[in-house]
Length: 182
Image (cartoon, rainbow, N blue to C red; front, side, top):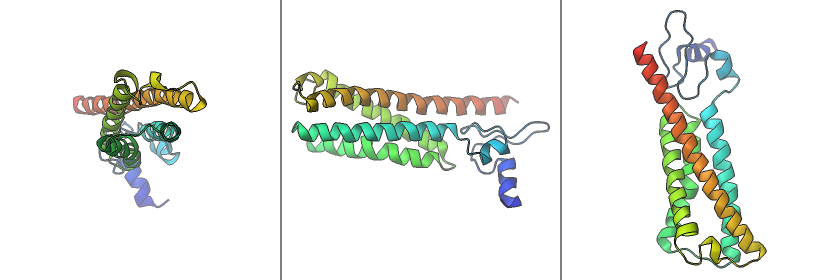
C-alpha cells in the first residue's frame, strides 16, 4: 500500500462523511463504523456486509418464489412485472453495489426504499388481496407450499432489509450529530 492511500485512510478522505481528525482522537468513518486504519485494512464495513447478506438472501428467495410462480402458472400484470423487476430485483442489487463505494448514504436510502416498497407489494399481493397470488389460494402441493413459504421468507427478508437500511442511516446521523457537538 502506498503512503498516499494510507494517508487517505488516516485522514478519512476515503469516505465522504468521515469526521475530521481532532487532537488525540481517531478518525471515524460514520457509515462503515471503522474506528481506525487497521479496521479499514481488514475490510470492516458493517453496513455493506449486512446489506450484501440480506440482498443475496432476498435474491435467492425471489428466485425460488419466481419458480413457484411459474410452476403454478401465476402470472403478474404488466405493471406488477415491471415493479418486481425494477424495485424488487434491480434496486436492491444497485443499492448493494453503491454501499461498497463512498456513497454509502445513497445506497442505504435506496436499500431502505426498495426493500420497503417490496415489502408493501408482497404484503398486499400475498396476504391482503385475495386472488391467485394469495398464499391461501395455493394448492397443497410442493409448488404451493414452496410458494407460501417463500412469500413469508420474502416478507422477512424485506423487513430485515428495510430495518438494516434505516438503522445504518440512523447510526450515521447520530455520528454526524456527535461530530457537530464536539
